[in-house]
Image (cartoon, rainbow, N blue to C red; front, side, top):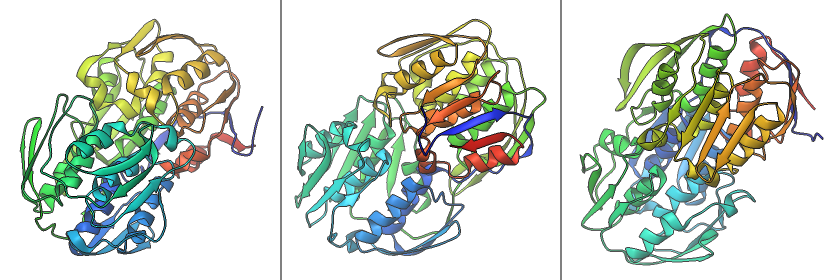
Length: 433
């Protein structure tokens, strides 16, 4: 059972030396969006040029913004908030939920009509979470079953007053971006504080925004100053090699300038509780984002039992954390993770199915997973086109007794285009089928 995007990992070696992790996906998306709404030229260095981020670049080019790309530098020539033009065709977000949800806030407040769509996976993912608060503020949005495609009709919105019950930075950022275009003060709150890259970037670009814990007040119709942005390396991508190094004997790696935003470092906290040998050194700050070098050595890990607010701080890293749990002696229980069922795949189901195929005992409920540690026995698993699921099972292949074949891996390019090359550079035997 294979297809043209299947990958087999057949033999592993210890990981060592410095590993170059690409730029942060979340921050690259936001930098392109805010750069397109700023006044002046912005150069974004160490940008992630993955398929998802290219979709964001293309979306704003379609909206009339002048953008050029050279290597991993994105140059944006912004003309201010009200410079966007009506697109000549539907905006296609591809597989990117971040793009679809964030740009919805921008499209909903324009003085022209537009339409937004996505690929076969994205059009099945929930959009009600952003549609509902935008409608409450006066937007006119047409959709079928609160999913893509969406049509945005020229509307006049009132200042947004919204408290998000769902721990979603995408909802928060969508509303913040919409608020930029609305006269008056918008107030956005959240029950659980989520990643704050949008707020940090607005502060860095000298936009009037007030942050008081979980409450954000933003005055609309201000000026976003164009300033160059250096994108930290992505901790979500780094997590795959952090865990790969922890579970592979005699491994020791260094990764430099990794973003360590405290709302994204739940994976480091949990791995520390599990006994991981991880050092954070050379801490610094670039364009209002904390960064540091991360040193990792192979370690014997202990099982965990986690739930609650920590989940929002490691939501993207849960699939690879499941692999770490499968390497522990004993049972790990992770609860409060229903949001994983609404990602590029149903990640609870995808990971459960794959782990069981590889010989690991797994039990799940709607919002939890229990993993009993054991040995990976090799086999064929389907990633269901989910980049994080695919990369997680390839990491499992590093320590599997027999080869692991991962089916449907093309979407690795949506977030980490150099992932396979890095594995190969570490002298692992990897083959495309």
